[in-house]
Length: 236
Image (cartoon, rainbow, N blue to C red; front, side, top):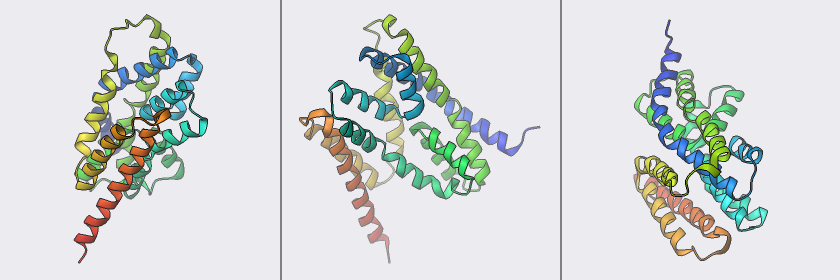
């Protein structure tokens, strides 16, 4: 017999399944690139399983290639992943009541695709209980996270045999465009996005890709300030 929780899980699974189309080439690209810079399969899989953050992994890999100091690599990766703290804050009202180990699971599988699909569903169905929301969240993650591991392994194992001209790297920009554009729902979001774009261009001359770190910090500050001013205007 189908229960409400299983229905929410399978609904999440169906909503998350289309992400496979970009997750697989995205993971494969990382596996290929990591192999090309000298990492072995164990190191590559450890990277993807422990970090499980595609953008931060690519940033860290590029900076490691450029022999950037470890602290700078960590700082840049942290800046790229600071959006996860904002994701956590927005999910807290929905999933903060579940047990601590379930929150740990949520934190681990909270990638961009899972967050984007889940927060939209919670907005559409405010009557969902925390248990139903958790079931949906895990359902979205089910077709997203395992394929990331498999695609990374495939890219690492088969990277040398992939034709050089095969444009599998298309998945990286398409993934982020598909995620970011629907989430630009307020002036603060748009302002942060514009500042991040300008910041990356203006500070591209900085060594070790530090321009990315500066742009990320400026974007977050801009978004927070715009949101503060909008809240002040709305206040009576």
